Amino acid sequence: MLVPDVWRRRAVKPSGEEYYELLFVFVDDILIISHKAVKHIDALKQVYTLKPESIGPPTMYLGADVLKMQTASGEVCWGMLSNTYVKSAVGIVRNLLRHDEEGKDLKTTAKQLFRTSYKPETDVSQELNGDGISRYLQLIGMLRWAIELGRIDIILEVAMMAPYSASPRVGHIEALYNI
Image (cartoon, rainbow, N blue to C red):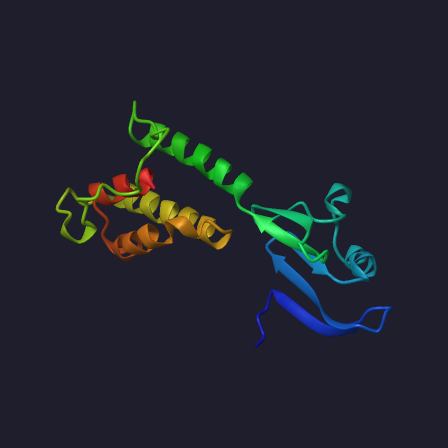
């Protein structure tokens, strides 16, 4: 399968172990997985201007925290966490809500993502206008990315709300703010 912003090729480590080198590009973020990453970065520097402080072992990629860890068996591997992204997203959504709905703020605690009686398919509240629809799509996108980064605990509720993206209602966006 060829994806324009993902490249892979076979490589061999000095130990003789075979693996695939990977290069991921998304807009201006580049992630290289290779035992010869420095060589590849030097080649990129010949063509592109790279920020010197951005070169090194990854700490963040596409909003996710990237970290090196050791498994219980002693194997060293890389992992991703959603902590920084989710914290940033909550701050952004808090500001959006304050801007859109003067005097409103996010709840600091919620016992559940939805009221048990809430059924989005029967919501007859007012339909959102163009700006409201845009905000709804923005929130769905942020929540979906949080799921991709590991927050699978919200996948059901976000999946239930996504189908209303074409014509969301006030109750639908309120449910997203609660999530």
